Image (cartoon, rainbow, N blue to C red):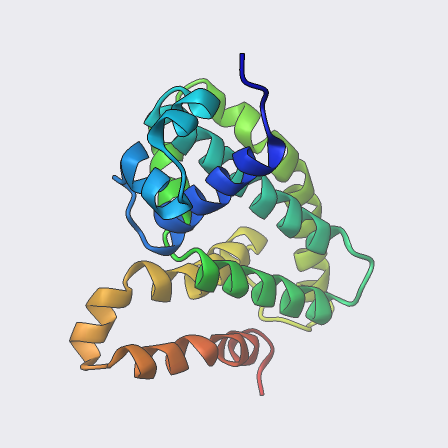
Length: 198
């Protein structure tokens, strides 16, 4: 019986992450992943048994990494503006690397049933604390007053929207890949200026 090799397993996961969430080939087969990873398809089935199990493993790894990264930033004892700046930068870097990840997370979440609460339990408690922090900044007059949940929904929208509608925006505004990449690279400053003023 073959022994499991953690490096090989991680290489398959990393390759599948790139194929699914960087290249946007969400319907890629195990053969597609095997070809991209430079391994045979039997090896993928040995580690993951099926394409669905591979996708689930990759998706869960990506989701937990994104959640942990966000929670770590939101928990840091640093000034609010710096915290938002780090959060925006981290989120944008993830979106640049894996532009199809957020769409996948949203789609998967919509298909979940009883797992929904468990999937977001850790993030929910951290977010409740951060909403209090947002309210405190509003009370001090540092940011425009609204419901803190609107602040976060607006922030997520400002971050994610340009990535999930990239092809539509490029057509609508007649932009090349290079021109749109320039727009994406300007997002951090645009978002920070919208939240805190120039």
